[in-house]
Image: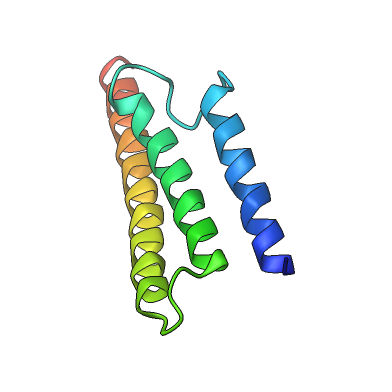
Length: 94
């Protein structure tokens, strides 16, 4: 196994552990709080699949790369929206 493959497995294990730890970026309220867990685990799983290479000609790896970065981008957007909503709520109750 290469170093990248080992790193991808460690990241996948860490993301699964993150799913079960009560401290989150977004609190685990139904649906909204689960989105960050889902996207973090999905991007780690896609990274793992990309590193282990399913296709010799690289088409699957390129698709997995785009899906992985899409999951990462969606995670960032969701976290930023949650921060803005929390800030707006805090501002209204100030």
